[in-house]
Length: 370
Ligand code: OSB
Ligand code: MG
Picture 1 (cartoon, rainbow, N blue to C red):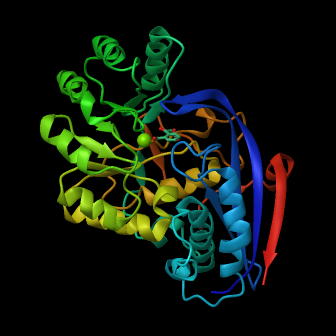
Picture 2 (cartoon, helix red, strand yellow; picture 1 turned 180 degrees about the horizontal axis):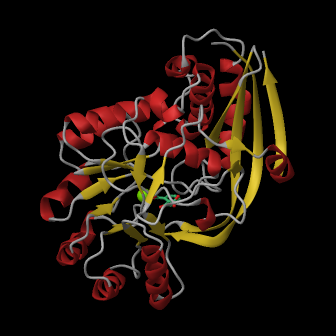
Picture 3 (tube, rainbow, N blue to C red; picture 1 turned 30 degrees about the vertical axis):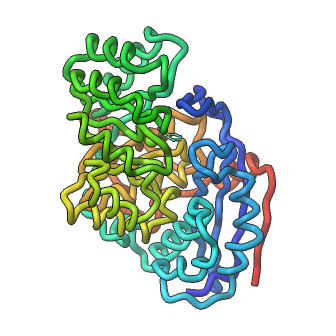
């Protein structure tokens, strides 16, 4: 395959409701989209999942834009590459910047699947045709509001509720949620808001029968997580601190977690996500698909990835209508009453990109050619 051009765009997309985590509140997304075009004019779409500031990880919209435009796109255009799997080889020289890389890499997978006339999920080697969905509910203005939101999501059929926690919004909140919903599958995500000194808090959380606690400690740590996992019964799930299959292997080796959240952007695209899934599956570590408040393009890629065999737990992949007044793909992603998404069997990501809507949301656009 030869990519003859890459179009980068930044779109702004306001969220229906703000989303708050321990590191801050998001009201409007600034999303970079990558469209790769081959010499025959076939195209593929990818999304960069970097946030609006360097808070989840080092990357953010502005650094990803510059890295894509100045380095990554020029390294890919005009180069012969065997397949989408091989795209990483062209951009290996660039360290880190995985979310920027994933925008191009995932777009190449979409293109390749379309050229083969295959749905992306099949092209990736997926096996599930229906994926289990959970929701991630941000920090709310009051506990009552959180309980209301949970009730609404359960009524919509979602199979698992994840709540965001931070110091001051943790054990009392979990206690209230459990009191109201004693049987639900419940998890919490701290986005690195705690240290090992908070071990007593996590021991106290053991009584609430959480499916897992996601990334309680530092974003770049594994060793303290291993120490914490020794002290608590609740499984730890790593998000931020697993950025590659190698790191997944290390985390498993030192027992830093019992579950892994896989995000395409965080690991640099589908090829690496597949390797993470493989390492985890071979060690009987369940994985699930995380979310980064993606538009429909990133969401469609997430759905395809979540069809891989090792994805056995409900992911943070939910309906477009939870985030956007109107998505940028057609049809929007919808969730069935039993809390699942049925995969699309159309070629590539399986959804049409609404070009006029994307155009109307575009703040800047750059075409990189060879
Ligand atoms: O840690 O999983 C996370 C959103 C932004 C940044 C980090 C995270 C999240 C979510 C949202 O939890 C998941 C979603 O897209 O609904
Ligand atoms: Mg997380």
